[in-house]
Image (spheres, rainbow, N blue to C red):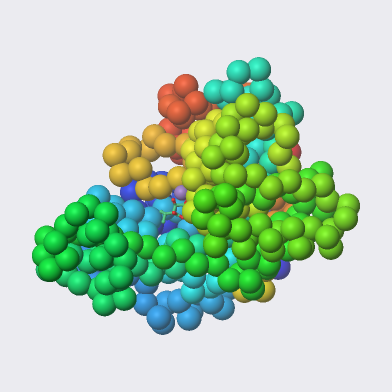
Length: 374
Ligand code: IPM
Ligand code: MN
């Protein structure tokens, strides 16, 4: 069996971590008797600065022929924040309609957590982040300072009244962004989360802010509660996002599966990453169950470490395990996770974030060697 997998190393440390991810996946493939053929796509800052192209329609069409893409990291200080992130990463999540962003928060054996008296038995949950709606839809604008936005005149005049400004003047400036969720978009991701909870410890927690942003997240909560009636075996609870951040720190053992709207999911998974040992250990999968999915570490491109062979490749390797599982190679995926765990428990090769001095390559080599020998 041969799988063809597009690889986008991306910016900053992307190429370094991706090389280790590919190395470990190749070791798992060899052991389990399948082949991986990598199709390299040099998207990112250099490509954009050379050609003016972020990710073209032709490239997207081509990529949509594959089941799984392996992605490093996107972002470069030479460009304004958001140009590459929105133009490449979010563009792909939206184009492929990868409506599930799956982010396991699991403290592996041998890893230190900043949570006092908590261990691997306490920190083992998964966040299902909605990935195509909410405040990420890209509808917003700026008005004032000579710019104006027709749709916004009413709110702008309220603002003028509030601050006692002259409505005729254009010196005041406002920015606004619209968050939107749909019934279809909400139910499909919540259903995915319920099905996932059924395969785990049958406990699903929903995250919202229905007490304040009631039009958008009150709607989310209603859809969650309606679907809950169809899964009588799953124990559910609904939580405000601010409270969730507190419980993650105080009682992470309460959680099994969580489902969150896009922006809250973004925020709480960085917190999740910290309690599982840091961003260097946190993988993510952008999933369209019927289309093209994409697997990546949740951290960014860490430009200050670029080319130093210093950062932790584990998040990328773990994302690679998720990719293998998605392709149907569950045993190979399990071996990669086991090898990561053995590497961490042995603690012979550790990057700086885990208190060691090993290079990115040394950690990748060690995990690849363990995979071959399991
Ligand atoms: C993430 C990142 C992205 C997001 C950025 C880089 C667009 O923070 O994957 O969590 O906000 O989704
Ligand atoms: Mn994020």
